[in-house]
Length: 366
Image 1 (tube, rainbow, N blue to C red):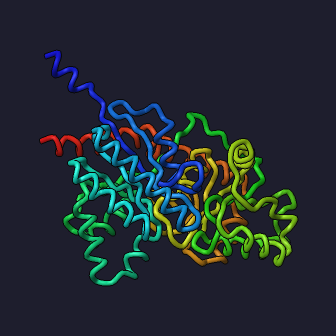
Image 2 (cartoon, rainbow, N blue to C red):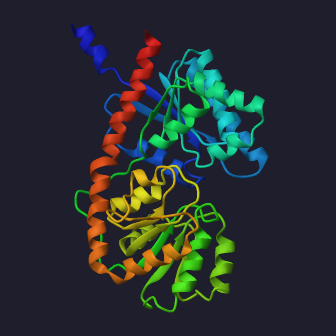
Image 3 (tube, rainbow, N blue to C red):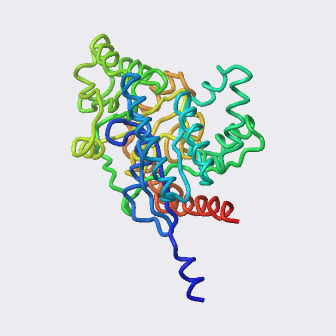
């Protein structure tokens, strides 16, 4: 009986691998940080190995070689019961496929945690033989965890025999809604560029500039095409409207979020943006697009607004609407905060992730 109890309480060791948490920015890194910082884990111990860093090819190769060595040592010493690999597209997929083969050689199960917003685009460009290779890897991995129901269908269309489950991204959320209806910032967060609809937002702000109150300011909080954004701000004459372009973190980010009236992410391709979850967790109303998993979080007119990608006219209308109607902002804010608290909390997410990882380990042990 005592032996049984001990076995039941034993924690599994989870080796998580993905981008360098200190050198790479973005949603995938935010998810990993959340997992490593939380104390919600009850049956798992998680440790992290960085397999990728932005930079020249020799730097990327060096980082991956170092990660490969560290993972090999962990496998040889039997320090991992399951390996959780953060996967996107292109090089990320091929690197994780190699790591999967290595782990399987040591009879350690592997879970792919898919984060790639451009995975379908990547897959569409492949030759028939390379598509077969991707299908084979998706089928051979012990479990594919995706971020939405729509992404689950995408994977199964490519590899019908693959084992797939979906788990929404999540965020820690306060019990009380911290949103201020008097906030005056329009913010967008994430990698700046065409895919994120950054230039559509700039065009909308240009068109609305003469009718928006002077106290309403805009912040483009992200990395990516920052120089191009700054050039357009100057070209559109928005220097007085746009007060920040570039990545923010720490105290500066907290101050910006505390004064955010709305978050606007008019993306063309996404999976489930952490920026939407993070801002909604703070009660900040969102304007985004009807793509991927976004409609699984934002219900148009209920807890935020959805538009068609590229519809700048509707984007302008929704911004105008939120700026002019404080009561509407407050109502959307309450529902946004409630949505995250009830369905996208980190505690719920960790519980399900833990169950999925345990189920994979249990199957391997049988």
